[in-house]
Length: 106
Picture 1 (tube, rainbow, N blue to C red):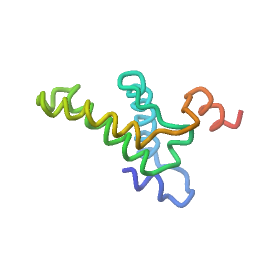
Picture 2: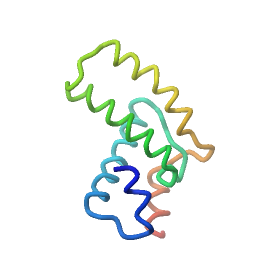
Picture 3: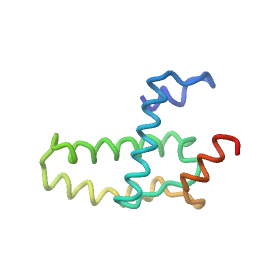
Picture 4: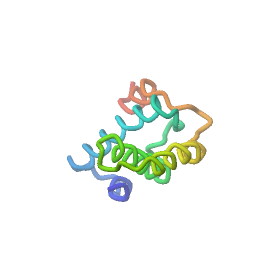
């Protein structure tokens, strides 16, 4: 789904794309609270960051739902959170309220 989000040629998002992105936005906030991988402002404009966050969210969800029950794998996830944090980090920290204001034109 990530490629479709960025390759829409400026057209309006489909309802499926919008739902996917809204879920990712929610996941990014939850991941930030839980594991502290806080992306920089404008993270949604950087496909590599979007893909990294989507992958991390999907990985975490599989453990949270019980789909995966693999303690060594969970430790691997916790270890890789640091690598994801380095990949997505920005010098201008992401703040959801400021981002929402910017995207709404306020």
